[in-house]
Amino acid sequence: MARVAALTLGPAGRNVITTNPVTNKAELQSDAANIARYIVAVPNRAADVGAMLMRNLIWRISQRVGDGSATAAVIAQSLLDQALRYRVAGANVVSLKRGVEAALTVALAELAEMAMPVRTHTELIGLANGITGHEGLSNLLGEIFYNLGSEAHIQVEEYVAPYLDRVYLEGGRWVARIASPYLYTEPTARRSVFTDCAVVLFEGDVTEAEQVLPLLELLADLPETARKIALFAHEVSGAALSTLVANHQAKTVEVLAVELRRAGAQRSADFDDLAVLTGAAVLSIERGQALAQVRQNDIGLARRVEATPDECLVSGETGASGGSQAAIDAHIQVLQTQAKQLPSHTPDRDNLVADLQQRIARLIGRVATLKVGAYSETERAHLIAKANKALRALPLAINEGVVPGGGSALLKIAQKLRVESDPSQLSTLNSERSTLNAQPATSDERWGWEILATALEAPFVQICSNAGMRRPHDWIGPICKTRRPVAFDVITQQLLPARKSGRLDGVGVLREALQIAVSGAMMALTVDVLILHSDPKVMMEP
Image 1 (cartoon, helix red, strand yellow):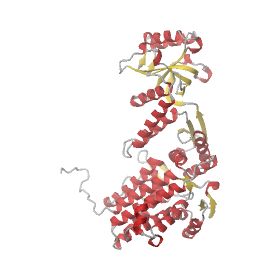
Image 2 (cartoon, rainbow, N blue to C red):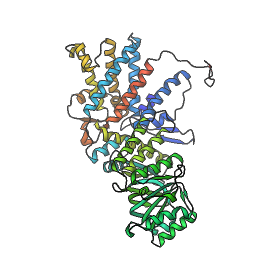
Image 3 (cartoon, rainbow, N blue to C red):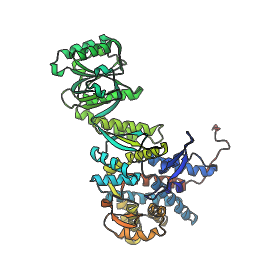
Image 4 (spheres, rainbow, N blue to C red):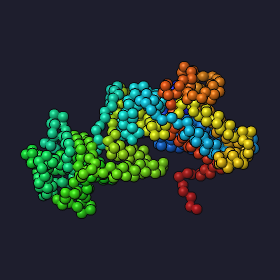
């Protein structure tokens, strides 16, 4: 499983063709996580345990950060291979594990120390190119994240012809539709745009004229310039819609009726986000609140509302009757916490996290659409998979910084581990151990440090191997001796300035890859017994 993942690593990484188990169609894959996803079992049941452990490791990385799955697989396999050799030679596996984990603490600290902030548009493009390997896609992704920042929500749309483009959306996007074409302010464009308008939120259906008359009367008492209302509900129809349209066309009150289209908890979340953004109260039938009972302090404000038959874009208004910035920030904090605390084994976790990220992005007005197309379905799916991979990895790089790519940063960390684990480098082992809380106390622990140091060289060696290089170790010394942040270009076989060349890796991706690789490899190392039931479908009573 690790060897298959390793084939995809680096700019010269190979592609793999898999058969989709649902459609039974051949699919081109260049991402380790997607390849592992389609390997659901191997024939030997005992071997299958190890294969599925590696599959889980690779998939966890993809779920968390998008990129780094192949790197984690290569590091984990190297760790396990070496540790098993030491075990055969008589080393204590618990001491080896303790040494590897102590070395990991130092490696992560060194990685954070090496981090460089992402400063330019070019650096983001280079980082995206390292993830996707596609120049056109990387140019668009780099531009979007440079303009919108790490909290941006990018929706990917498919096209049936070769096409790459992006569209920036003003404000946040809601899945919704305008209730009637008679409410269009721009009929030729099939949309309605309101600026500086009142907002009313009703979590229910609006069908009777009696439901909307009190609201219209309330607005009629306001100055003429303030008689604009955007009404959000489940559905607006019947006599209620006729009444709203009549008032809109007579200019008594300008009305924009919008129906939120998502279902269940997602639609309730849409109302909650609109309430925070606009300062409006959510009136709900379930809480015994009728739209006819609306009061002045239930009404919020929006800077801009644009509705079409497919969606609604809303820009909030802070202050006055609009949402307060403090309330918006607090709501965003809650959503971010929910996304971080979702367990990796949660069913449909990817979609849940994506939904929370979309909600955060629309609250801060950072939304864009990435349009991806190709002639064939296989190629289109291949490009979209690359884009989704980058959409997870780039925000982490913006927030946590970058290091020289292509395995160069890991080589320097490996050198650091060898220095710190060497007793000759320490004046007093015990005192150093008490301050660093990491130095190896036994020879087996010290071998654990060496095991991790060697494993950190494995991604660089694999990248070179995928490019056809026969002696990759010859470059490890020159890279480690260079004080400047450099990256090795396996295509031209040159050392290049990491920033200028755009050969960068995200710190967050490497951190997750290291932690999960060590966790998986050490779990495999310390397993001595496999218990395989004769019929795994039969649950035995205790």
